[in-house]
Image 1 (spheres, helix red, strand yellow):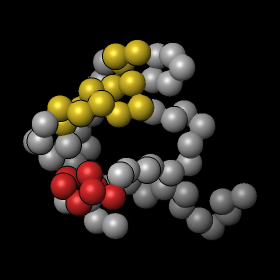
Image 2: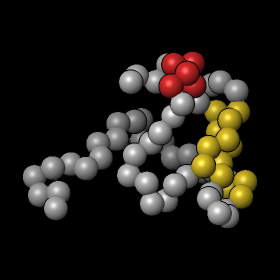
Image 3: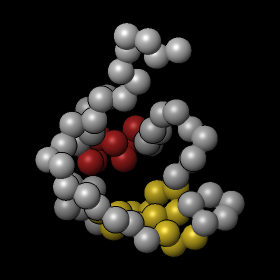
Image 4: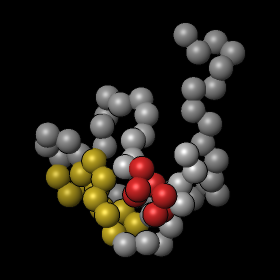
Length: 65
């Protein structure tokens, strides 16, 4: 139960971004640019509750750890 808790608190500018799937099986793949960088491929784990990034890749993107 999430009573009294906010499971996800996402902050942003309210813009919507639509992504096209590159592939949908066995996992959905999307091509994205993070912070204006090179285009990279991400897979979406529809059953996952967290986001996992390679440590070096996260540092390269400037993602806080």
